[in-house]
Length: 77
Image (cartoon, helix red, strand yellow):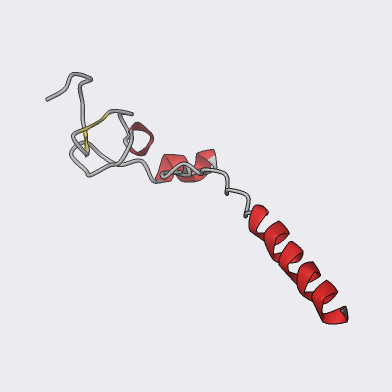
């Protein structure tokens, strides 16, 4: 009789555990790009001349990065 109660308790526990599922993880954006933060001193020293390669406008002395190159004019070349 004791084994029957233990078996029933075990089956009930298994059924209850089957109902509990892991919670989904929150979706994180695939691309999280951290912008560079430089002091004005280093920003002034590290500005690139016209024609140098760049990733964004903040890297160029003219503040114009076009087609991954520091540009003199603002129009797309």
